[in-house]
Structures are given as C-alpha cells and as structure tokens.
Amino acid sequence: MSQRPLPTGHDRGGFSTQAVAGVANSQQPYPANFPAMHLACLPHGSSGQTLRRVLAGVPNAGVLVLPASPSQRDGGQWLLGMMKAVRRELFLQPELQVLASVDPAAVEHVTLELARSLCESHSEATAIGRVHSVTNSTTIVEWLAAGETLQHQTTGVELDEDATLHTAHVELGAAPVVEASESSASIVVASQLSPGSLALAAAYQQLSLDAHDWDQLATVVTLARIVEQPRHAAPLWLEVDEGGKALLVALPTLPPGALDELLQHEQRELAAGNLNADVTVELTDARWEAVSATHFALVGVKGTPPSGRYTAELFYSLDDSPEQRLWSTTISKTLVDWDASVRSAQRWLDDAS
Image 1 (cartoon, rainbow, N blue to C red):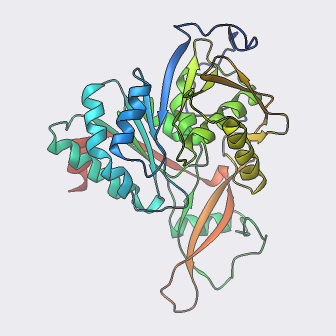
Image 2: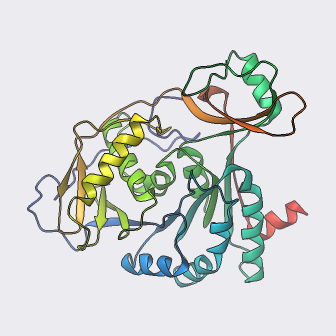
Image 3: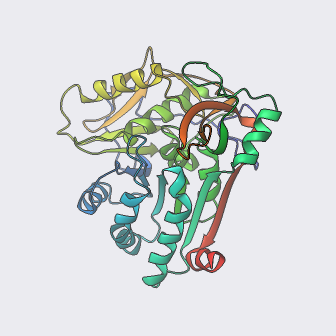
C-alpha cells in the first residue's frame, strides 16, 4: 500500500487542504451553516429509544455509525436487535447511510439477516455492503511461506510449531468501508475494524485531506475513536465543517473535564498498543479548543504514516483437542486481501440460496 491517507484501490483524484474559518479563533461565533456533514455514532449496547434520541439531536445526520464492541462479541445480536429502529430511520431519512461493524465470525450471518429483514419490509432494493478480510487456513500457510513468524503481538513469542491453524481475522482500516460506501450502499456491515476506522470511513468523503496531511488524519482518527467509545454519559457527535475539518459536538450538559478524560483514555489505549491501522497517532501535545459552547476542535495531534502491518487474530488448536485458541499477532499489509461487496438485499438472499 502506498503511504497516502486511506488508499482505496482507485484514484480519488487527490486531496486539497482548505482553510477552516472559526476554528483558530475560539472566540468567534459558530455560524449557522458551519457543518457540512453530521455523523451520529451509537455506542454498542444502546437501545432503539437511544437511537431516536441521538438522531433527534442531529436532525440532518448523513451517516449513522454502529460500532462493534471489542469486549462484547455477541455474534451481531445487538445490531440485529436494532434493525427495526434502523429501518424506521431509513424510512424517515432515505438519504441516511448506516455503517456498522460486528465481530468477525458474524459478518456473513448478519448480512443475510439484514437482507432478509429488508426484504420482509418490502425494501428488497436497498443496497447492502459487506466488508471483511479474506483469510482462511490456506491464507495463513501463505503468510508463513512469505516469511511471517506469527509472533505474539504482546510477548513476541512465536506460535507453537505443532499448532493446527484454522482461520484468522485481520483488523482492517477504513479503506474497504469507504470503498463499499462509495458504491451506493445504504447499509455497510464490516468485520470489526481497528479502533476509530469505522467512524473515520463515515466522515472520509467530506474531509479535506492533503496527500501527506498525517496530522489532520491523526486528529480525525482520534475524534473517531472517541465517538466510538462505549459510554453511559451524554451522546457525542462528529461534524465535518465546510472547510473539511472535523469537530466534536457535545451537549451543553456535558460534565466539566469529561472531554479531557476521554482524551486521557485514548492516550492510555495507545500506550496499551490499541492502535489504528490508518495512521500512527501521537497525543502528547493534544488539547481541546472550544469553538462554541457545544463544538470543540482537537489540536496538537501529531500523525505519521501507519506501520506496514495489520493487527490479526489467529484461531488454532493443539494436539487432538477440539478447543480453538486465540493468538494475537500482526501481518504485513501487503499479504492481506479484503472483500467489499455491495448487492441489493434481494440479491444477497438469492446468491445465498
């Protein structure tokens, strides 16, 4: 992959950086026509009632993000349980795009169940995108043949040579979701991505990113990670202004110091190795600047090109034991393929039958 923000496999014609009015001077009033795009993110486990409340707070939301929870692998049950509420919002806002992620083993099942649900509600023409890494036991053998040692991501220990390899999941970045969303998909179901990549993909089309503007990309990724965080406090939104710069939006009732706590949480996550696949982020000098009572710009974030590796999870067994074990490692990006297919709900069901 080239060292350019979010390569998508096709030429977008480059990026241009535009001036952002109102952000540098935090005392300027917030113009009524400031946002160019609203992004609403509903943390994993939220209810349909919360969805309605969140979208009511962002009446012109262009994208709804429903991220998976790394700590709660529920087989996509939360997303499927939200489907009735999501269908309602798609009916009320036909232009709304929904980007969701689920734990890796559930992508195929969830995609077909969503397709079935849409067909039952006479929305069989709705386009659904499915995104996942292309991996299996043969793929893992090819990785080994290419020189991958499959060292443990944390300890550096190599995988037992007697291990029987079954399958793998790679935490992709935003690029394949951008590819699917740009192909007119109303709903995109992705295998769990690296932290922040789903919300980044949602905002990507409106961002003004120069080919080497890694600081800006790192800033957006950090904001994306923050809105994806599971939380019980007031909801947060992401806006991209008319200059293509992302801002965090919070209710005026947000407790003092809450944003600083969110930023400190991200610093701890990065220190623990929970990195993003699209950019390497440095938050040492990061701080908030108030644009208005409810809108905040994140400044001082530094970014550099991402590492050439994806985080991956391997599933293996030892001896004659049927028990599959989990092994965390990293894989060279050059060895990883993804699938970003977009079909109508009816076509997904027809192809599966």
